[in-house]
Image 1 (spheres, rainbow over the protein chains, first blue to last red):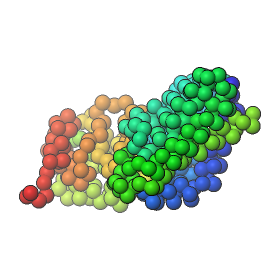
Image 2 (cartoon, rainbow over the protein chains, first blue to last red):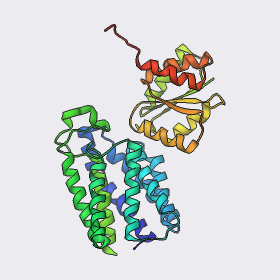
Image 3 (tube, rainbow over the protein chains, first blue to last red):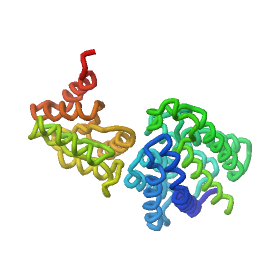
Image 4 (cartoon, chains in turn brown, cyan):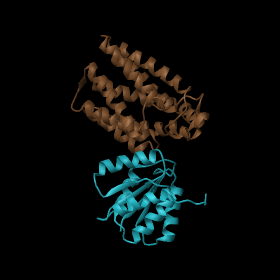
Length: 210
Length: 128
């Protein structure tokens, strides 16, 4: 079970992590993009953090939707509509819930990923956040299906996301700004996949403490 | 007249495209939605919404975007707006904006403009 307090704690942890890694993400984006990923996401999550107290007593669906809407209006780069849609879609499937079963937690992640695919018109293997998110979801789902606890299954998911980030170094970007660089995008890890990994790591850390 | 909105990451670029289009069609209802509220690079949901409102009429609005988040953010604005007569057009930003402005003043409908704008993609600047 995951309750709304833990969801708030995860969002809070993500905001702190993104702020701490702002320069690193921006540096990654400088190499193959327009160099704004860290700055944009940090601006967005700072606004989210300021809004969190007004969401604290809401259900999980409303919390996630509120986070998504705030990201859409404050990030300013591609990660705004992408992560914004992800959180809003996760909010749709958790509407009215004060607690999530492990299966519902996984479904929320699945809905978020489908939101990213829909908004970005992207699939796995294009050197985007999906290269961290899709393998992570698969490992999480497989773990839960095999009877693992949410924390253990999510730990598998984080490992899969780490491998996914490494994998982005080996492929040419075909979506997003990096696609303009063609083979020059090789050897660089994708900033979006990296921020997605950070978010999953934060979720794991918070749930582990519980 | 069909309203036109130019969405860009850059405030200067959006305003420049509007300026260029107005040289051909001074009367065209055209608005820029470039950059973030603080002037930084990026695309703003609020700026796009406000620009659409500022040129909206029953004739509808055509929104032209540069790339990436400009397209995705506009998509989200339109989904929330739920109006059939506000559409994104897929075309080169400068050529499309000039064509849209001229056609708007000429009284074209939004549907006809959507078809006409596809031609902006085929316009060649060089002979070969």
